Image (cartoon, rainbow over all chains, first blue to last red):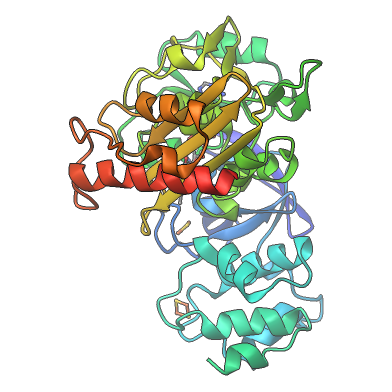
Length: 161
Length: 262
Ligand SMILES: Cc1cc2nc3c(=O)[nH]c(=O)nc-3n(C[C@H](O)[C@H](O)[C@H](O)COP(=O)(O)OP(=O)(O)OC[C@H]3O[C@@H](n4cnc5c(N)ncnc54)[C@H](O)[C@@H]3O)c2cc1C
Ligand code: FES
Ligand code: FES
């Protein structure tokens, strides 16, 4: 066991971890932030996606020890202090970008990372960016629509399909 | 996973010292190694993380115009900052998905030498040089068959040096589930000739298709490949494609790569 310290959602946290403890295990198990999901555990589905030093990362494929000193943001950390939703979260609600909701934390974190780099992505760019986020329910259509809407773009063209 | 310790040295020298211990193994971005550990296909006692070593990260162009990429540079950085070699930047930008590209590194991919990985094709077609903590290895000597390379125990890839071609293109035919290449062909045209490297197809891993190189060196056009066929001997055959299918794809993808390179 070794001690690891990092900043999660703006708060500094620490804990004893084994070398093999995954970042997602630390987040869910030690910090009890269970918004971050584990869908596959094999780096395919993106349900575990969080931001590490501002970059999208699959937390099932990174060790907690590797996040020493890092700034980590999970789905719990993006909402306002009063619980208000971000534009991306609100758009997911408005455009029915979720059904069961299992993939949603990863989708929202992925979309948030995309819009930071590319504030007005095209539909094709959104679909390309979400390659590593798998959803079994929605067929992706409304997720793409929500992200177009969150970036202030017209969703009419997608709605017509 | 079996348990192990993780250490995070800040210099190549400290990493090499840590790797000198019995059963220690390097950890790059972990995008291949962590899944392998989860399947208990590897059981190191210590992982030496290379992600804290700044001296093996980043991209520069040297006096002779060669593009030098640190072994610990991520696919995402190469995609974003490798514009001096557009075909290579495009290859990096099409590996896996954005989260994989934010962690995975060129050194990790080349050390692993997966028979379907993308960078081996770029390195071999570019006649690149693999630089380690102890020596420089020419691409033609580096790849030694599936998952096998010239690297010794505890040797770290510190840099990869790419001579920048006049024209180049990487044509990947994606296996849709894994997003690796079912077959991928990298064509690079230099003043002194054309090199063609094929990944995803052979049981021996990445290889040069020399007949196509000869034809393209005298006439760099897709037509120059008419009548040429790659041999299906020793091609990978699995549920995704037969040996004959892969051999056929090599011809088709090489033509497309040449046409796209312009
Ligand atoms: C969903 C998904 C899709 C993918 N799609 C593709 C794809 O389309 N094309 C493709 O090419 N790859 C693909 N990959 C693999 C990806 O590119 C990996 O990042 C890469 O193969 C390994 O790099 P890494 O830095 O993550 O290395 P690690 O997983 O950390 O290590 C891999 C091996 O290399 C060794 N190693 C690591 N760094 C060094 C170094 N600097 N010097 C010496 N040895 C070192 C390790 O000891 C280990 O044996 C995909 C991976 C995933 C999860
Ligand atoms: S749980 Fe991490 S990618 Fe699926
Ligand atoms: S909403 Fe159910 S998996 Fe995406």
